[in-house]
Image 1: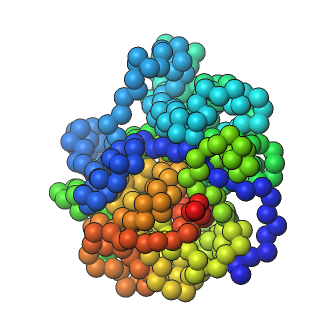
Image 2: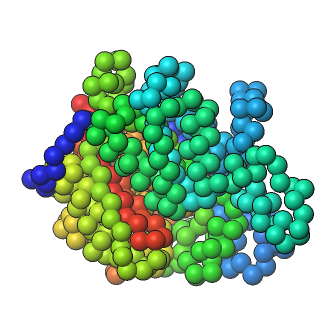
Image 3: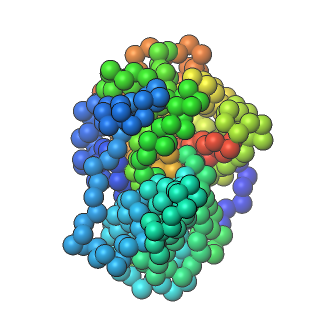
Length: 416
């Protein structure tokens, strides 16, 4: 067996939803995944505004909050990022049967929600006063929209939560760390219910951040063919946006109230590299995966699919794939959704966890689009291609990694 970790309470997922370029409900997302086309587009508005940007590609989401469903007063402190988190969370709570429940307000329900930063426009308004010496653009909600914990804080107030709040604002591992920490909180008996997830809104600033590191794709003439994770001709990532929310719950609590269970959170592992702020580290990545397997008390052979981080960067894909092979020692089936919707930063861990659960229950796993020739420097994993793959498995793994040397791994178990 893979581990001897002493387990506490069982933790299950009773609801989930996403805001993404693929869609927000499973039938729509499944249809778009099977179409095998990405949603990356050329940003013509950047041509004049940001002439020094090498990449002109991005994957924004067609999103606007329903002004009739949510009053101005309810969302006045929410920027785009918190609004996406709210819509995803509302749908997840509705699926779980907890939307409007008094249980959310009685101290046994909390939230773990992360992002890279808050909304960008309010940040600009705050910083601009230091340049212009003009404070006229600042309002009572400017900081609330801009603060890194804007999603968690706004959702906590919106649903009148009175339990714990956890805000892992750690870039691309934010969503997965939020789920992992929420899982540990319930397992320890501290809370019965946790809203868990991550979000990030799109900004050219995010593209510029990676562009300065030469990590963005410059295949500007062929947006439908990039990013191309694990391909020998890959040249970098594309920035996307979105939100993802899972409702985690103590298993016995869920059973007592007759909730439908989507999956069990079986294992969680996280490590830090301790070596470099941006360069990945193979041994510590592998250790995060191994910790999740030990936490689940299973063998690597029990896992039938791995949802990889797969950013399409030169060093990232090589390091991640080899670290994965170090743990599995076999060609485990894997794929990355970033070839479809770009890198959603703080949202990716939550979106990809939801996708992993839904595919496990569907018995079908999406292919790596844009992967034509595997880079020989990448490990010999089973990179799913073609029309996807039908796989019957009881366990799936989702892995995410972030600047700062932060590594996360989550394992989900199918409920019979």
